[in-house]
Structures are given as C-alpha cells and as structure tokens.
Length: 115
Image 1: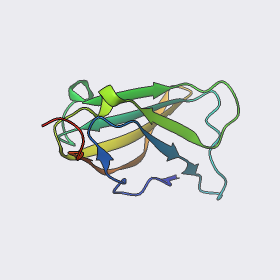
Image 2: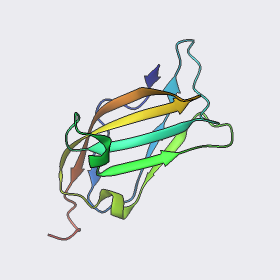
Image 3: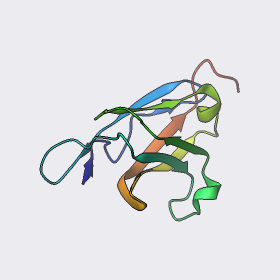
C-alpha cells in the first residue's frame, strides 16, 4: 500500500494550524476506506525513537466511509522548536498494524510568531 503523502510534507510554520490530507492507494489501485480503522499520525525528532517520545500524536477512528482523512494540526501541535522532524502514518485494522507512509516534515519559524 502506498500513502499519497510525499516523503517530504510541505513545511509547517510554528504555531500555525495545518491540515494534511491523507489517502492510501491499495495494490489494486483503489483508495483505502478508513471506516472502521484506526489511523495514527506520529511526528518525532528521531525516527528510531519510541512513539512515546512523539512531539505530535494524532489518532483517528472514522465511523463513516471516507477515502481521504484530514489530519488536523492545531497551534499547540505545531508550537515546536523549528527543525526537521520525521512523520509516520500507521493504520490498524482487525488488530493488524501497518505503516502506510513516512518521511520528513519541517517546522519553520514563522515571521510573525514569537522569538
């Protein structure tokens, strides 16, 4: 399965809200229906670190049919030290967990956000 998330997400400005659209293409070319699955979006400084060190951890459990999941990041989610971080997307269905995408995301210091 392949995530439509690129290996490098667009930069996010520190303290800004952001939305990341997530779609997973299955081997037959169809898009995954997220209904009934649990989706985790994880951001951490070190890719090999335990998930409990994540600076952002969002969990979604859609109960309606959807092929596009919006990962909503708030000001408090993105109010992190500027730098390059690793993200991962995990999907859990029927007690089976798979990583559907991973890569880098940059949190940038915004021109209007603090010092």
